[in-house]
Image (cartoon, rainbow, N blue to C red; front, top):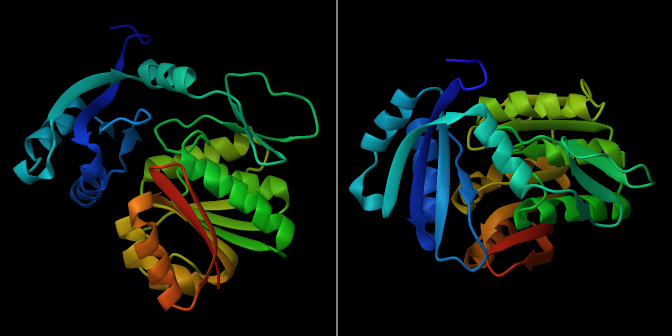
Amino acid sequence: MSEENKYSGGQLNLLVPFEHVERVCEWVRDAFGKESIEVTQPMADESLIEIYFDSLLEAEIAKKALPDDLYIKAADAKEYKEQDWTTFWQHHFQTLEIGTSLRIVPEWEETPDDDKINIIINPGLSFGTGGHFTTKFCLEALETSFQSLEIETMIDAGTGSGILSIAAIKLGIPDVVAFDYDPVCVDQCNLNAERNGVENRIHFFQADVLQPGWYAKPADLVCANILTSVLLDAAPLIKRAATKRILLSGIREIEADAVADTFIQLGCKEVSRDGDGQWCGIVLDV
């Protein structure tokens, strides 16, 4: 088999009713130690969840391990080629203008030469391009927070592609640390930092936001773009890690009140929230 046609690993695709996506993603995270990629078309009543493994055998074993009570409509394990993933992103990820000063540019597109801050991203097998509402919300809220507050330090929990951390550095926040549960994301973050000329300026590492010890000291700003159930469980740790502001996303709109109330009970004050009918983001001051 030629290098061009060589298979890169295994892929497990799950078709899941929209209302059960979070539960399935959480189960996958707990059972396999993998972060899922969710692909949802606007106004759709079901989502495609993709999980990537090192081999087809691992994907097939994972398929057999799926419990019957996860409300999965269909499951398919297959081999995937590295170029399949690249083609997917090239089709779904285009240059995006974000806020007043940020621009997200796919690595394979030409970078405009103007006064905007260009953030060059290749997502790889990680999540975060700015196209999904949750990432876009965090980027806009990050820019607004930087403009209105004195932000010197930031923690990016669940960093994905590293897009928020890279944006923070390029906006002018000097001290940024970022972590993700998935080691694949950490590797991709370092590559994306290099693409943007900010390598060695962000400390990327693997950690679980639910486990104490992911921050050595509190930061002015904490961004957490994570599933609602994880945000609720990690709320005390996130609150203690922030000294000025918290940006939360990855929240279904119907769950926004529960998330906000949890942090308010810990002493936070809600500043703003926004949603797109499905997803929501919340800004809180500490």
